[in-house]
Image (cartoon, one colour):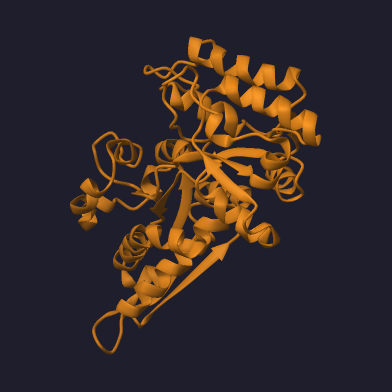
Length: 326
């Protein structure tokens, strides 16, 4: 399952790596260390920074890339999400020291990097990337373009979500996931599960902005900011999201965790019955809990009202895009 899922992103990864090879970090062959080999094809090394499942998918993409360009060497480094941003910010601020050729960056961080360090990122449009633009949805195109419409990053994925759930815990509690259509149903299911099994319903990361809140906001077509860029956490959509989270908390169905590692630990240790998250979380479960094969299923994100929208995007994690450093 994981292998097939990763392959679905490989084409995008190849496009990114190909552009990195052609751009040579946006500089000359002498600046980048890239050159033409004996066959006349590109040769040299490309370094890619990523984390978790996204890094694994880049490694798969690199295999296909190197088959096409055998004189190129691609090094994918899985250095951790927060480490990437720390190193990236410091590197850009110091003029590009120690940075890779390609780096995975989450959508809501892209604009900040482009605005603060516009000269540090490769203009992909100048390299002919625009011919690939229609392969992605309008939203992903918009967040990877500057004010002049030039691409400074390549879209990676759209971050679809679902609710991952422990099938064995649901069965023990006598809860049918197909009966969960609204957030009200979700809360009621959580109460039954807690009563019958003692298991909390959902983990919440108290050390960072929470995935559950973002999913709820997105499925209502809202976010932290309004269309004019003003902070909008007092919106009706935000109130609805907080009301559900408050209800979950009041019913003692929430397991508070300190950071990403805490959420993963709660997942693999069976401390929670569900984890609403992006599709990539399947890779985390399979990587961290291989002994739970067959114990996990997934259902659509609950709606706020019967028949309402059951799709959404999670927090910034892994709605990733890639950009190239000059």
